[in-house]
Length: 216
Image (cartoon, one colour):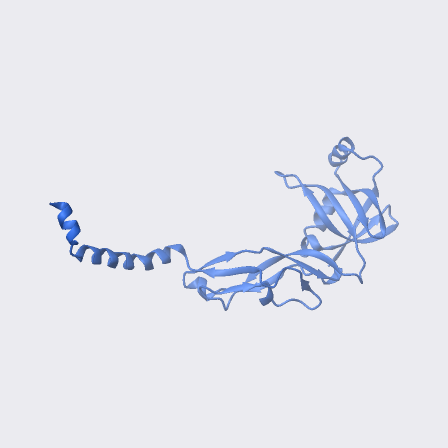
């Protein structure tokens, strides 16, 4: 998925001009890349919010039009947000080429219903994002992990995942993505009978001769 975003060159830099720009509905930004000289820009706050909140998520391809003329194919490499309000404060746009692979962080989406969870197990999710390498247009929105076949004690590692064509995961194949674990409550219930049996055995044991002498 691709979107188009208008940008204007930013002549003033620093905290003061940045605050004034945000107050007027603009977001400070930077365009950079191997074949582009780093350029300070301003983008419309509403437009950049819409661009980064499509179904493609943060890996959406953005056709950045600077000054109404120059066009750059970009991806948002770093997005700074307000810690409370969540509005966008600054964006770094990385210039990419359609025929050159790039790295990106892609979220992991769990799909399906595990029979192990239906039986009382719990999902223990370890990796929520995976680093992938692919052409810009082939970066997936998310990597779906189907847990339907997982029972209690089963797990999925990076090497078990089915990947879209042209996409390579850079994480280690042995990295644990998720597992279905036995809930603590169930473990305690299973251990209680054993503890009770051990207590009964101890109560039925005859005191040793040394214990008898010590009690006289």
